[in-house]
Figure 1: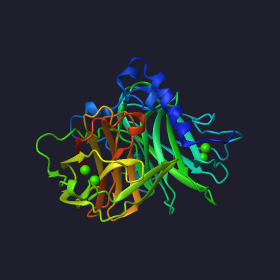
Figure 2 (figure 1 turned 180 degrees about the horizontal axis):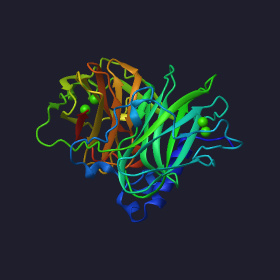
Figure 3 (figure 1 turned 30 degrees about the vertical axis):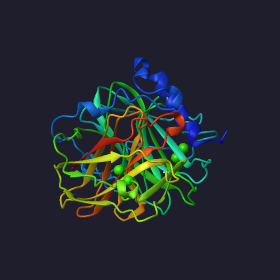
Length: 386
Ligand SMILES: [Ca+2]
Ligand SMILES: [Ca+2]
Ligand SMILES: [Ca+2]
Ligand SMILES: [Ca+2]
């Protein structure tokens, strides 16, 4: 059975979330809207302390971080071929690879896999699950590296074994992606890696580093370092830059019109935290899947290797999504945060020192579900650089 749709897969993930969180299910939003409750394990509230020595050395495209600094052999490699049916796809009746690997505080391991040439359905070219064990409560993230190919989006997520999401898919096409950090209690979980269509003509190898560490990025308090300009005179379209439609993977195009990212003038050096404030305006969609869309240009400092961006707000019925683009090119996507039902969205992306990036904050159009009644809504962007 290879028929699938992204909506069906997300429904599976959400059904798992609604049945898998016990008493937390009611803490989120109305199940009838298709929105999941916020993850009980979300690390948003447990931030604290400076990054410690267990922090890996970034998301090098060759997956070289971790144990000893060299790529080295992986701790688990996906076997060639997946047998019949859904193979190791966690969503379509497959069985995730039983890696036998465990992780606790300070630990980490590396996975190797391949996007195969013969596994495509209408959603993705190949979809691989890897089951692992958390032996003791720890904060971890999964860092994916691969050889980028034009037009192909890759994604990485962390699921519970019932397929509900603990770290929503981070999606990009620039060679590396990371889930947000999540604090997980003991038990089994699944790393999910997939690449979008078309199926490759040759197998595409990838690596995933799963690393325990402390990547705290607490909400920045106090006055914002940058405040969105008042774009009311432009119908709140002055800074939109990207249009995003969800058909399986996000389909991204320039927003059209005369929009431009706001020049914040902010440079993010390693160890620095900056706050931006914006307004999710109450406007109708310009034709994509979003209402207001706001882009902010920032520069990675000379010593920065990654930026960790979180967007926080108080609108219980508003979904703000975050996309990180290379400045000036909506075709270059570094990562996404698209958790449904969460008032905090986080994404971690690798950066090149001195390069400019767009932090894009979009309000998902959910008016047909009776949502978005909290608009207009002020939100806060916190950007932590490492
Ligand atoms: Ca595979
Ligand atoms: Ca697979
Ligand atoms: Ca705005
Ligand atoms: Ca805007």
